Amino acid sequence: MINNRRKFMKQGASALGATLILPSPQSFSILSNSPNETVRIGVIGTGDRGQGLMKILNQIPNIALVAVCDPLNFRLDAASMIAPNAKKYSNHKALLAHQGLDAVIISSPLNTHAEIAHDAVDTNVHIYCEKTMVKGDEDTITLYNKVKRDHTKIFQTGHQYHSSRLYAHIVEMIQAGEIGKVSAVHAQWNRNGNWRRPVSDPKLERQINWRMYREYSYGLTAELSSHQIDFCNWFSDSHPEKVTGFGDISYWKDGRETYDNTHLLYAYPSGLKASFTCLTSNAKDDYQIKVLGDQGSIIIDYQNAWKYPEGKYEKQMGDVDGVSGATASWTEGKGNPIDYGHKEPTRQALEDFRTAIVENKIPLSNIKSGAKVAFAVDMGIRAMDNNEVVHWDPKYNL
Image (tube, rainbow, N blue to C red; front, side):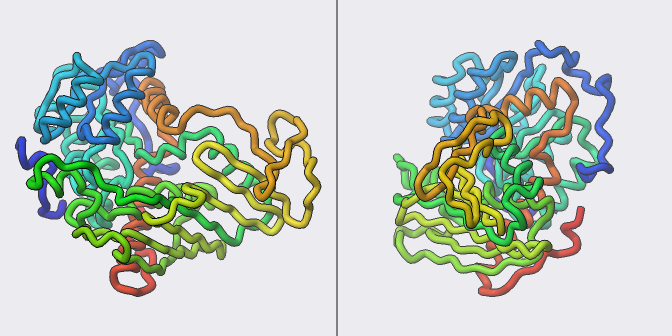
């Protein structure tokens, strides 16, 4: 049962592995499955992330942004500047009743995802739910079971790097053994800033800066590290067995409740140990993932990657990207660039969402992969909160 918590609308109001069988195209009553069919989308949550998604949606052919929803009027006004023809709603249930709606994007605060997704399933529209999919393990299980039982449309989670063709290529490289046996991952997503948004009215502090407050969010782990946890789950084709870690509020003494620095270590069944660090007081190297194998390493940033051969330091390695066959150049301290053409990950994810709808395909980032990340995030929070090792619960094996 969904936790009784503050609702997003307070002011306004399978298993996807081999066992899931998607319905036949005929059951997709809204769309005709034509490649040129326009998909009509509503966005629920028009804060920074929602507005960013809206701008990208406007650039994608055969997508119509028809409705937007937020309980804060100034955010709705900002959304109207991006999509002037979209109908405005302050209540997500009203948006879900919008005539002709095909799909929704849920980009509201984390604690609202479960309720809105449940209602979207009941409306039987396609769903793109931003990361982290759900706050809390019990609500994750409840939503997963409801989607598996009742939903006949597409459910995609907003781990956009799962749609990156570069990241997909790197996963193939790792799984093909190009860097040998992987024993460790060191991931970070560091910033130097308080992570706050400006607040015009103190009464709106918690709603605007919801990432800072436990009622709404799990903070850095849910908003940032979750992407990198998703990547580790993806390339290892598994999930963490246990996690330990530390987090506290040691730098920004500003009333926040979520940690301003987090340090987590997850252990996977293969022996892989994956560490995830988030800082808000030092931005050196910003976003980075290092995958360490016994034959080489791969270093990844937002949209670039390098392969560094273990024990071989020739600066001309040849065919390192596995595609072009070109001799690669050397980047000091990182190695050979992995050249692989790809789009910005969020745009690719939204294009993939439309493709999944029109072609009736299971998205790469789906309800099952999203649930695995949500469980891992919840485990990490409990490990830091209680200073303990938290183990994967058998009930997570959905």
